[in-house]
Length: 257
Ligand code: DC
Image (cartoon, rainbow, N blue to C red; front, side, top):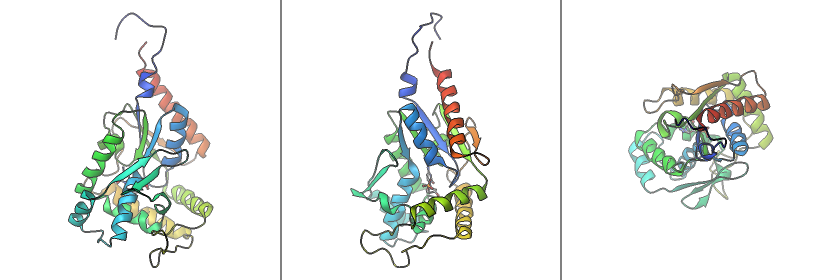
């Protein structure tokens, strides 16, 4: 660092920065990422939506979700684009806007299953690194601070007790009424979902936690240099305020004087 202090603080580190947010399902990552992106003028990129889009394609193509080689082959003929939007990312799967299909419980479950395969992950990580290469992003997922952008200057690992996470999910689904079908017109048989019951959501969350944390490739783990934020006893506003403070402090420490 040079000894001659400039009175003007550069905004470069803020504009080019990468904020990595990782954590388990239902911890509130998407909401937090959206608020952080807005607050700091960054793009918000949801990597879970990319795994969901790929899972949707596998479901539609009736590819067995435990056939890693078939899934890898499928990935080679798939394009996924993520377009940052005001509320959520718009997801284009082979050019089709599939955003409205990604919250279906079958897609949610399938996303966690297809994401255990190293070939699928390597492809996704490559896409995500390309998407974020220019910086200026908040990227959220499971492995952003550990694998996708291990050099990210700001990392938050957002957690909450399973009961709290499933309660939030329950309220979320209640608000959106019903989960969506996976096909534009017809829906897949059995997927015209009724609102999920509380216990079912808790079960689903546990199953996903198990898979996401225990898979051999890139299991969900906090990066050694991540700041842990446990939102169990917090309201959304409190969690957002805490996260803003974490990011602001980190960015201030990066600013050249
Ligand atoms: O964040 P989400 O709930 O939309 O993610 C759906 C699934 O995708 C999640 O259960 C595991 C997988 N995923 C992943 O393996 N790595 C990421 N970076 C993001 C999601």
